[in-house]
Every structure is written in structure tokens, then in C-alpha cells.
Length: 289
Image 1: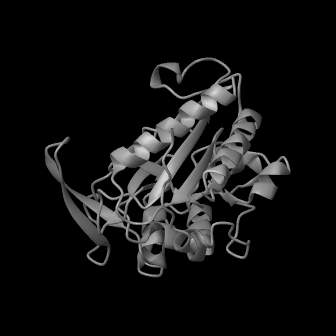
Image 2 (image 1 turned 135 degrees about the vertical axis):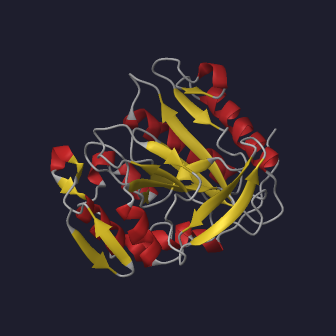
Image 3 (image 1 turned 45 degrees about the horizontal axis):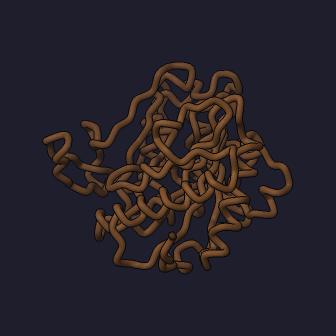
């Protein structure tokens, strides 16, 4: 077993292939997260992480992990929380420095998922999420066309939306929120806007019972719930192409980009971040009738 130390972390199995089709190793994953640290850390800080780990690589089943694993170093920040639904105490990992990011990559935590609220008040969302999810044979082009209809509707409501690729077939459109909201309010808002979109476009469905309707695009409002998560901006995805969930500008999206344009090999911290003003653009939600 080969080992080397990066920062505070002793790396194990650095040559194990995480993305076998591309021959990308754990060391490649670690180097990506080191490279992108200036971009991803602001989105991870002060949030409780849910990991999706792939110790044997993406061609083997992974698993979700909320609770910090045995052997977590003492210098990793943890957030204790009693889960009523699980009826147990959890210790969520908080990633607020590059060493923790390296340690997570060494755990083969390829996908880093964040809740829509910060630790200071986990029941008060500071992000509202429209999860645009196309059902085959609909795909990314249909997600894009839906996102632009949604953007125009939100602009008409006085809101300025941000968009990113999910890293798979869909898109995430978000609104940064001013304080004081609860999840039932954001969930109801997204549901109401989705219903309006469904009236405007026959492509769109807004009800849970329709989520698997072939060729439709579901506006998933249910992620707007306490302790539900979205994939972090700049997180890797467990796809054969080693895609990255990447913030894009609306002009980028109009330029016919595809998810495979944004990968471990193409994304770097020097790239302009279309979400750079996200944390200073908090908004109030209008009434939707």
C-alpha cells in the first residue's frame, strides 16, 4: 500500500483508479480538489456535509455518509446533531479548510452535498433551489429550455437567478435568500412557480406523481426541506466522464454547453466564477398567485 503525505493527510491507495474509464486515480481526485479549493470552500464552509463515497471507484456502488467515520482526525471540525428521523446522534463534517478537503478526497468522497441552510440556523434556508430534472427521452437540451423559461419568469418576479449544471442530466437554478424564511415557505414557493411553468410549457410537470412521466421535465421542489441537500458547486460527480457540477452564466448556457464540457480536467480555480456574487445577492421572495 503506497502512502504519501499532503498537508496534514497521509494519503492511502493513491494509485487506485476512481474513474477507471479515464484512468483517473485517487491522487488525481485529490489534486483536483486542491486545485479547486479556492472556489469550492466558500460553498462548503458553515454547512454540514453529506458525503457520497466510492472507495472502489465509480464502477462500483458507492454509499452516502452523514456521520463522521471512525478515525476522523481531531483537527476536522464536526457538527453534532440529533436526528429525530434516525433517532440517533450524528456528527456532520464541516469542510472549512484545504486539509479537510484533502482528507475527504482521500476517503474517496467524490460527491460533496450541502444543505440549503447554514449551521447557525439549520432550519432557516439561505438558498432556494429549483432542481430541473428531465426524464428520458428528455435530456439536457430540454432542461436548458426549461431553465430559460424559469429564468424569465423569475426575472418578471423581480428575482435574479443563478444556474449551474448538476453534473448529470439536469440543472440547478438557485436564489440566494435574505434571512427569516422557513423551508415550508421556500418549498411552497418553488412548487407554485413550478405549477405556473407547467401551465406555460407542456414539457414541464410540477407534481411528484408526474416525476417519471417520459419526456417531461420535473421541477423538483422537495429538496427545499431541512437537511435535504444539493450537490455543491464544483463537486465532482460519480460519472464515467468525471463531470463537475459547475456554475455557468446564462450566456454560457445559451451557447449550447453540455455537462461533459465541465470535468475534472477542464475546471480550475482560475476560471471566472459566475456565482461570485451569490453570497451578497440575498433576496426577498414575492407573492406568487
